[in-house]
Image (cartoon, rainbow, N blue to C red; front, side):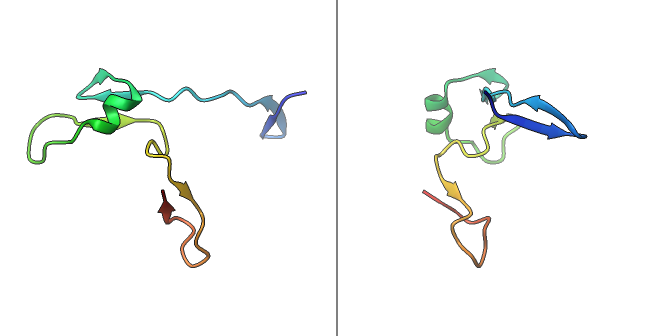
Length: 71
């Protein structure tokens, strides 16, 4: 029995998200992504990812501000 997502009243199985990491439009590993420092003031694209928290912080710990992330 799996987990399900209910969209529009229809149960669909959750698909595990595969996160991707890019540096200046080229594929990179998570480790390369974390080590790379964006260069301010340039024309490069810099870092892009679909990982909501690549650095491993947990969000929602503060009752005053649930969006504060802590490592």
